[in-house]
Length: 428
Image (cartoon, rainbow, N blue to C red; front, side, top):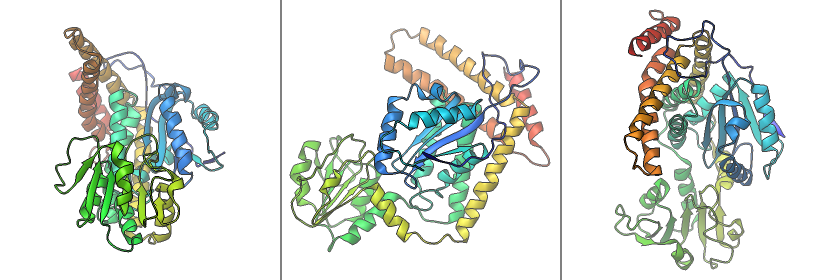
């Protein structure tokens, strides 16, 4: 049912409990959880399976953390991969629970999902953030997606000492590894657009862009001589004076006029179906997740390419790994081992877990006090206050976490942890 890639976990740091000052630690630190990663990607599963899994994750979003026996939880969902990271005291039980839950997902095939544990999970996330596991080597967008996932988990309160530090480290490692690759900014969107232009017998005269995100802006810059049609919920598209702005109801009317159609929205459902287009020669890029274009539209002179199609095409064109890739892989491997050692050191000193627990208790106390003084806030406004307080705590704790995770002959990790303990003892 699954492809399991597991490295025996190294002890990690996380303790839970009621609010205390950092100095009020138990005499003996409790055993800390392991980091476990569950995932699937364009390399292991079909687009239809990933769509089904994303839908189920959304449906079970409030239940999954407890179902997987996690003390910390984060998820990364992109068009090409879905990954869940947890910290848990019972990795074997969590893996069994995930196997049982995912087995009910439509389209599951042997090898569709993978599981990494301990340093294997750390290494995998670092490779993802670095673009080493992407459809396009060194892809730029994935780094910002990893960063966003870490911030989302923090601000929701579902990640603390272990996963918050892991996501911080993944962004730092990702930047270093991408720098070692020495590649210009590359993305699935840019590669797909260039491929689509190659498939057309001449430069497109009409281009329909469904969505006005980064993909649409890039497309507009590559087809300067074409008539542009933008389908957007916005009232205007100020960046492109020659663009005709449309609403979704205009798609079927305008699409037959266009040689190139690109859809990359978060719309759930098809915006174009079989029979909506005539026999004119055209290319349709469906870069959306879930898909925006009916696969049945791919017939005759209309060529439709979705993310799975592009994965196969890019795979056949991928260059051989060079020396730069070897350097980037070496950075990832070394930093993964370094982070695992930090987790081991943190287990022996519960300082960071205590600091995170103390900070969360203080945050909640102050946020509750502020909300009591603002009784007329709407539910949405109360959520904004809560999210702001979580972001502040996250940003304030990031520097001491990074400091404690570092080590040098002049100031080894143990002494750094002791210094952080003393600082927060004074501040608490």
